[in-house]
Image 1 (cartoon, rainbow, N blue to C red):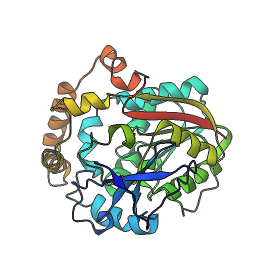
Image 2 (cartoon, helix red, strand yellow; image 1 turned 45 degrees about the horizontal axis):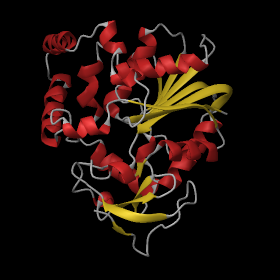
Image 3 (cartoon, rainbow, N blue to C red; image 1 turned 30 degrees about the horizontal axis):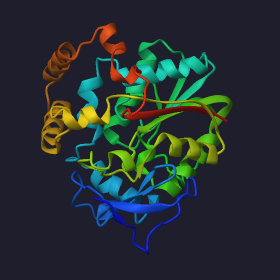
Image 4 (tube, rainbow, N blue to C red; image 1 turned 90 degrees about the horizontal axis):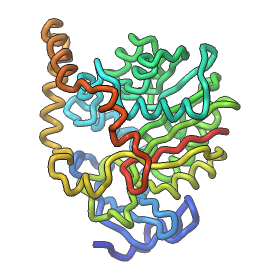
Length: 333
């Protein structure tokens, strides 16, 4: 149930200058003990539809949350919990992203690619699977992922990409930032996009993917909002990209419909189950785990999750339509 917005929080949308006039409670299930995510509301713009967590939390505040809570050993988002799932498989999402990138640009040995927040490296591993001869870079602060990415030959900046980051001198031919932008406040989101434009080559392309979360339409279909601070619509993301000075080449949506995610009880993530699976997977990745046991677990996982090329191409990630789970936008300088 929405209520009138209080007088002491944002009223004008910094994306489109529209009116933010209603708020919803912020559902914080995964990080209920994190002080940075206490006493929040989600306000949404009646014009572009973007939802924003208020009062606004800057990167200065949230970086403490990510260092202490998000990447803690017990966090369900710790990247080590996902390594087994992608170690011997091609990610449909990453494959669909690369197919989209290659629609707008060809890549050769002189080109460079950067993944901002690759986690366990599905996009980078898929590039290697496709035989793309690129110099590859990544911004990834999670210690579990840094070592594995470097073993793949990736040059890793072991830190978070943020509004205050000191940028490298290199210019990238392609940049992917998948499911990262929603972790910033709206003010910091614009700053991050401007930073990305600075490191994109003159003929480079940038692919950004965020959850498609129209709070005004799907406000009741929410279980856990944490730790997201912005809730994007197509219109809002387009306006933010243009505000950052980039040109839009493609915008669409992909993934499973929100109605299906909400109505199918088997799909939504259960926090306790996710935590349990994460603990089991990290046990296999522990230095104390015999290598033969780890390899056996990886091979079993590969067999269980093996997909044919038809399975990959039939995945929802390739189905571009309306009211889908992800927004994908490709742009240039």
